[in-house]
Image (cartoon, rainbow, N blue to C red; front, side, top):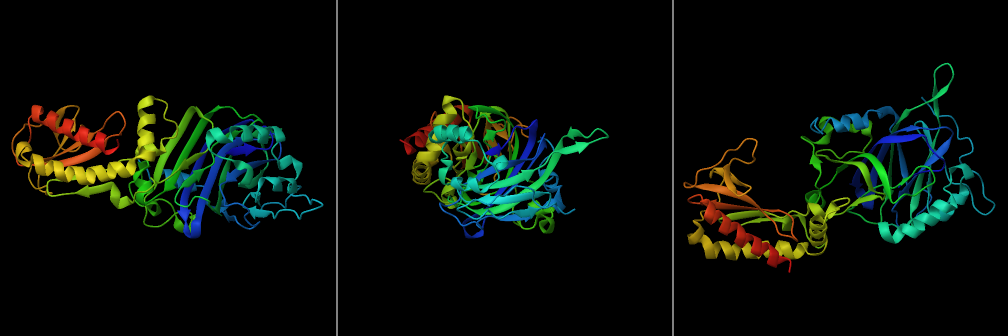
Length: 417
């Protein structure tokens, strides 16, 4: 949720980076372009454990690394001064001491441990009761009950330019912090919009999301992957710990009119990273669960795939692990299977045809016969495409290839029934 305490002229070009940190914490780095008429606050909700301390969030000054996201974007293919003292951000309340104000580059920032603690802020930097009422009304729909969450609050000021001091658009330098998360292993991105006091069901998104993920979560993300570990383009020293050395990054974009809610990406439940792949003498497989973290699947097929990835993935993993072993043993002679070794020439199925290579850009139609390995994507109306690779003493003709794929589809379907 990116909420502003007062109306703003423009918000766009939002970029958010997240990764899990040690001791059950999460990193979050946030930047955007904005036009402001007056001093206000930006509020980011945080799924902290209930009743955190006032010092649960650690703010990190990245004002010296304004190009953090520019460098981060460079990791992916191209297609794709001291701040003044706070002036009124905090105000003492008769019953409670004011929240701490931290200077973070150009901002003053505070952590609000729970929603009731907003009374410890100046009224200009609180959200209206009407906004909270609408959020409470929607909590069951978008999966977040902000009543016991914490909030990072950043004080923003308008920027003026020229002789007449007209309001100018500004690129906010990255706001960075770590917080204890109530859901270790998942990554939270505050993307729900409250920009003008309204909470629309759908909103216009202009977001680029970045992360570093590993294990089963990494396997469940349908996001782009950086060509190299992030330190090849991002300075670890200037990022002050935000990136993890030796690990690649992931990226996706949210553009256009979309359901207005936060993004949480989660690893599959009840499976480990090692459960998502396997091999035998004549076969190998890779289980995909990318539908699990699709932000807003709006067609029936992908919604069905998402339900399977969320609720039936252990069955799919077990079904492929045991089923492929039994099926390849039973069909070894009929299918002409052979040990799957790296020296076998690579092939794949393009539509219903057998092709050489790994993809249609570099491959070509293949001629049946002769040894080879074939990777095929097997899917059903309830299971997203899964990769199965078989080794052949003689490559199958199209009729046999169709029979093989049909039997594999039956195996996949039964695995989740």
